Image (cartoon, rainbow, N blue to C red; front, side, top):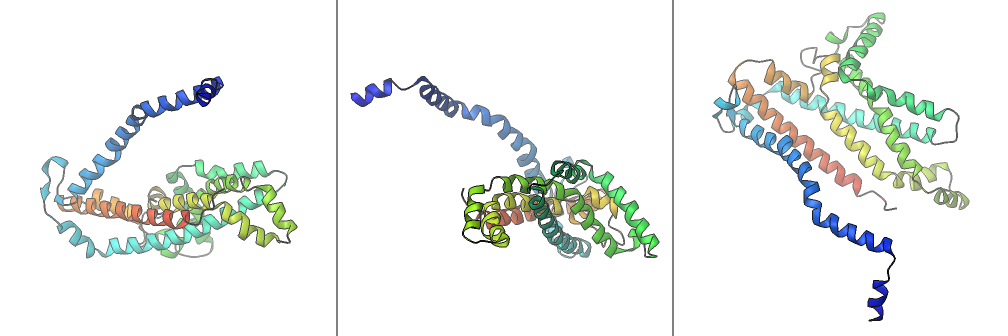
Amino acid sequence: MLIKGRQDKLPAPFLEVGTMHKALKRYSPIFVLPTLLAFIIGFIIPFAQGLYLSFCKFTTVDNAQWVGFANYNVILKDASFLNSFKFTILFAVVSIVLINVIAFGLALLLTKELKGTNIFRTVFFMPNLIGGIVLGYIWQILINCILSLASKPLLALNSTAGYWGLIILMCWQQIGYMMIIYIAGLQNVPSDLVEAAEIDGANAWDVLWKIKLPMVMSSVTICVFLTLTNSFKLFDQNLALTGGDPNHSTEMLALNIYQTFYARAGALFKGYGQAKAVIFCILVIAISMLQLKLTKSKEVQQ
């Protein structure tokens, strides 16, 4: 009875919080329903339809003819798709490492007490606001000018320059965005923890590797995930900068699928391109889930 009396005399704010929590729990399906419907309509249904069409020969959705695994069998013999897969993997590995290392280094510098850090943050972030097609054509002009001055073949005839041009473009566009995420993570590292480590004799390198880096692993998880998915999904920059030239040697998976589906006529290539798209989607999801599992296991609970 005494406990019950005390509960009756709880302050009003506590009673309001409890009532609000019960209301949210009761009506949560109503709030979740619009997002769930959008997800089903915008992703689940198109993916299911695309999965079905990957087993068909068609020119439009209405005249699809079931052909089984014939489209997937052709992919295994398609040298251009396999080359695009290898090129995309090589591009993704190098760009992920460069973007995250440089972005983290800049974040370390810009979290120090230096003058003008806000200006530098803005300047580094600005390339992310420019569209991929625009960036592609801008860098195409710049790189072709440099190659011309050096008496080297232009991008249309130079696969090595095309590869590194894509790397430079991707880094220039993404580093500023990842830097902002790393800055937010570094600013959440407790200063008293760093001071305690320094008092115990830890140098700057020890503080970085044993305190700051483990504490910002959640930011690392986000940044690696974003750079990984963006690297695999790269399309407009690839289309504008190299267009896959020379002879499809700089053609990434997204561009290869586009060229198969839209640049070729006939029912065979529609189903073939759809099968490529399904493999591409499953590949990106699988690699992303594996990356999330590996990096989240390294996170430190604050």
